[in-house]
Amino acid sequence: MKGRVLVVALEHNFRSGIRAHLDREGYRVLEAADQAEAVGVLDREGVDVVVWHAVPEDGFGWFLMDHVRTLSPTPPVILLVSKGQLQHGIEGMKRGAFDDLLIPFAWEDLHAKIATAVQVGRRAAKKKKTYRQRWEDFMVAAAFAEAGAMDEARRVLEDEAKGGSSKKASAFKKE
Image (tube, rainbow, N blue to C red; front, side, top):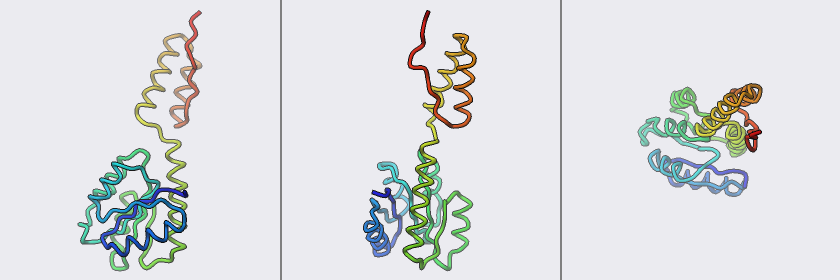
């Protein structure tokens, strides 16, 4: 499987066509008809990328983009933009969309954008730590500092600042 893609589009035939193409390309595809349904899917299932055909009938609201930014890891969003809605694509990019694609589009273009988004999203997910992981790193550093191991405490904090994973001691040795 190349990745998990959520396709969000009001029009069933449009959504199904994208799904059929992506299925053939080896992606696991989930569907949602609108933003509200997409939020529900995202809350239940993790995806690598969201492909969203934002249209006026869906409210042109941005709560889907706002919700995506709260997820960890945050899946990239590719906006499918109709010719008459170019301002919507620009607004989507300002709000954090990964990329956009003008409709009508070539399947190769959609596939290339999704493949890139999946790759970038997975790389970012590996680097991003949860608040709990960061808290644990700080607690380990505090324990090292309290024990007088300032070099180890500094190393843990430097690793944390870089976003890397610190190699925590397997056990605190008491001598």
